[in-house]
Picture 1: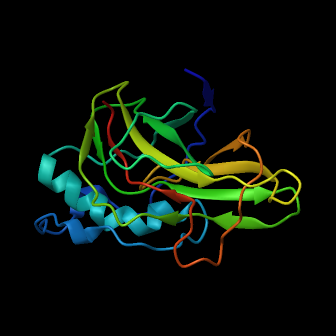
Picture 2 (picture 1 turned 120 degrees about the vertical axis):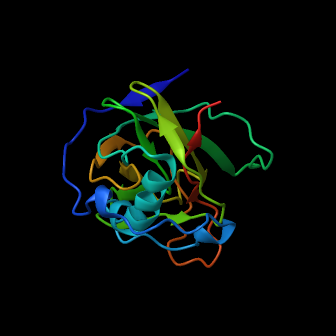
Picture 3 (picture 1 turned 90 degrees about the vertical axis):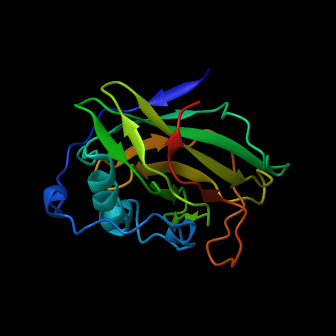
Length: 196
């Protein structure tokens, strides 16, 4: 299994997980298709959802997670077909037991100086309780392009849900079909789930 990893860039969250309002029942509609406004927006967009998750399961929300990229993502029921491919982002808990829920933030930075904040799917989110050392997984689907005409990516920045632990990796998957203005782009990130 090919792995890329980075050290944790510790940040802080502006939300106190111990003061969350009573949790509403979880619904499939809680996951929306939205464009992220930067990799760190995962923290802003998922704070309430993570607070509710912490209240539901009785453990604090994960504030710091380390990230790794796996080139051989586990199979799913909706496998992509070329020119789409899938990898997995793994988020390991280096601290005490905690819960994570929601979508990671993903931002590409191109060799041409432009950036692309990747869209989320409309898949439902789930509470993922992590013991020390355990991981949550988020699938990442991307659309490649011909090296001669595609968008050449320098790096990808990934932020675990409800954290400011943005970690940047070199992009080694080749040129992409940059669809930053598309209504239904072929590149998107799924919510975190339990590692199988």
